[in-house]
Length: 88
View 1 (cartoon, rainbow, N blue to C red):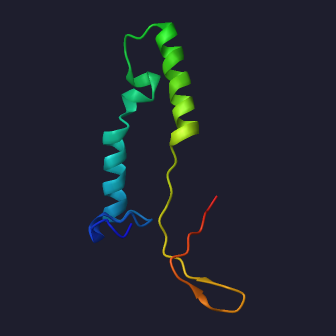
View 2 (cartoon, rainbow, N blue to C red; view 1 turned 90 degrees about the horizontal axis):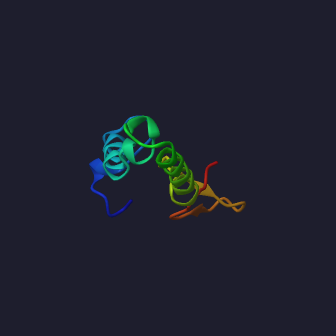
């Protein structure tokens, strides 16, 4: 995130950066690449293959996180710098 311009950092809650990230995701993954309902004229076999492909890609490669400012303290009450916190 340090390499992004300040206006592109995707803070939760509808920030300019959050909207920018959503726009980028739509360019990278247009709906017709993942959803049968956006693809007209596919055969049943092609629809099945698209569903399988989409499911596999979501499982293997996709995920979307929310960026939140976090301050983490250890048991000795010292701040951990550059902490990475995973959220479910």
